[in-house]
Length: 91
Image (cartoon, rainbow, N blue to C red):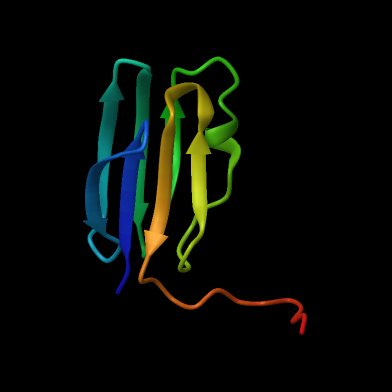
């Protein structure tokens, strides 16, 4: 199963298994984000950034999918998750 890698300002904050449901407050000097891991996917539940775009982003579960909160310099990235589903292949 995959991991959720959380980075703030390019530094790894932590890695969390996607198969263990949890809710955590990720706090930095930039602000706070509530990150939820649930049923193999992750999302941002709450944020105190001005635009809150990260809260509206869809849940991530596949390798390489990302949620970002640019005001907080926060990136959530799935590592080693399920292969992404492709809707088109270019070659």
